Image 1 (cartoon, one colour):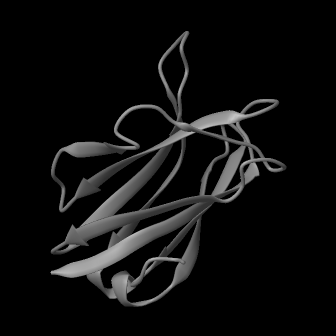
Image 2 (cartoon, one colour):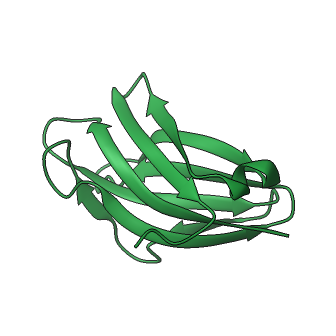
Image 3 (cartoon, rainbow, N blue to C red):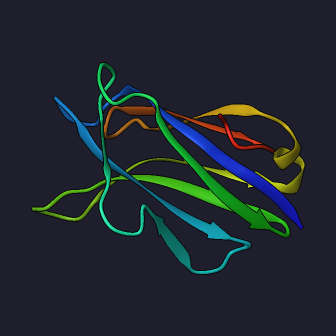
Length: 117
C-alpha cells in the first residue's frame, strides 16, 4: 500500500471571472468517489487564497484519481481538471497540471510522500 498526500492546490487560471469555489473528488483504486472538504469548498483565484494547503492523506494499492470541481449553485458543477497517480508517484514530490481547456481553468496539484509543513 502506498501513502501520498495532496499537499496543496495552486490556481493559475480560474474557469470564470473572479473566483472558483474549488473542491476535490478522489477515487482510490477505482472505488467510489469521496469529496474533500466533506462539505463546502475553498474559494480560489490566481491572486487570492492561493495556494490551498489541503494535506489530504491518500492510501491506495494501485491508483488514485484526483479531480477538481467548481461548485455551481445554478447548474451542475464544472470539472476543472484531473490527474491519476500510481504507487510509483507516491514516493516523489511532484506538481501536475490539471486543466480543462473548455472551461479555461488551470490548476496545479502538488503531491508528495509527506505532509507539507
